[in-house]
Image (cartoon, rainbow, N blue to C red):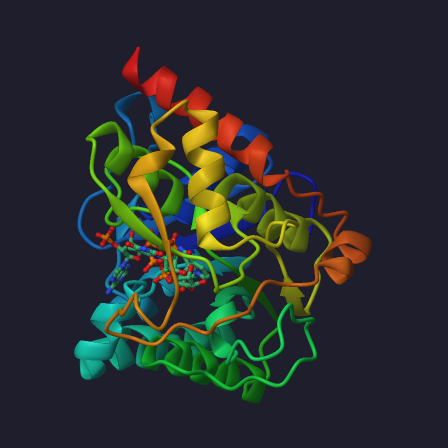
Length: 309
Ligand SMILES: NC(=O)C1=CN([C@@H]2O[C@H](COP(=O)(O)OP(=O)(O)OC[C@H]3O[C@@H](n4cnc5c(N)ncnc54)[C@H](OP(=O)(O)O)[C@@H]3O)[C@@H](O)[C@H]2O)C=CC1
Ligand SMILES: Cc1cn([C@H]2C[C@H](O)[C@@H](COP(=O)(O)OP(=O)(O)O[C@H]3O[C@@H](C)C(=O)[C@@H](O)[C@H]3O)O2)c(=O)[nH]c1=O
């Protein structure tokens, strides 16, 4: 690639939590030509002054093909998905269309344009019987969301495109006009409103700061890495641990948090009990260095203060 040509990165789901962090990071780097895309209009803060934006519904193969033919991306960071796990359990066709069929369209476009695909996947491809997991563990999803994300991985692995699969866990952070919350924000807001919450103490995760995940994805591009990578936080915690840590950090009323377990706390979709990731491969091959959970809360707290000022 000649020096004048900046490598081109297309992002799907750029209005999402990870999507917005990727846009911020890549714009700050200034080394790439960026094309953020999503459903409808961009929802970035005004002051980002992002010129490029393309509305691309990834469920429509024609829209995908048109965008790829026009932009001819060197890299695709595919973050868009139906990420509400309970909604996936209830809207099977819609979930399949977005989490599986759309990946077929993106892979075909990547094949045609020799685009290197960085695809976001999840700990929910595992059954949670033997976490924390490394990249070679045997998947066995326990809910429909996890099954669709595993099928998506398989489509990519069966293709002959250049690809990296980034698996992550319980992403937290604050972004603009978010379409869903995440555990720290939800605990903080509930306690600030004086609401009692029940939080499970028998699920295990390695919660991931959205900024760290974005950095991990960009490292893959910088190192032209291929294959599977666990990119998550490094602390193994239960949601109850996370809720207590959040209450302590923001000096909120811990007595509003009651401990429960997965037998009593029922969600529509089953959650894998013990997941979490071993991240040695990303540490060694991508120089990936995630923040601790407490430092992650600190970063989120600063961003919330900035947003309120
Ligand atoms: N969040 C988490 O805890 C985890 C996430 N992951 C994976 O990481 C990825 C990013 O997650 P996260 O940032 O939380 O996701 P978000 O739900 O925040 O963002 C997903 C984005 O996809 C967009 N989208 C929905 N439908 C379409 C469509 N038809 N065409 C184009 N874009 C669409 C949404 O648009 P709109 O904003 O308009 O709804 C949204 O901006 C996902 O693939 C997810 O499976 C993996 C493990 C954990
Ligand atoms: C809402 C709620 C959640 N929890 C627990 C259950 C769960 O372990 C954790 C997070 O619950 P949620 O339902 O908010 O999040 P959940 O849907 O479990 O999050 C998943 O999202 C998808 C996209 C992924 O890929 C997974 O990695 C994971 O992050 O908090 C409680 O204990 N009490 C509650 O009231």
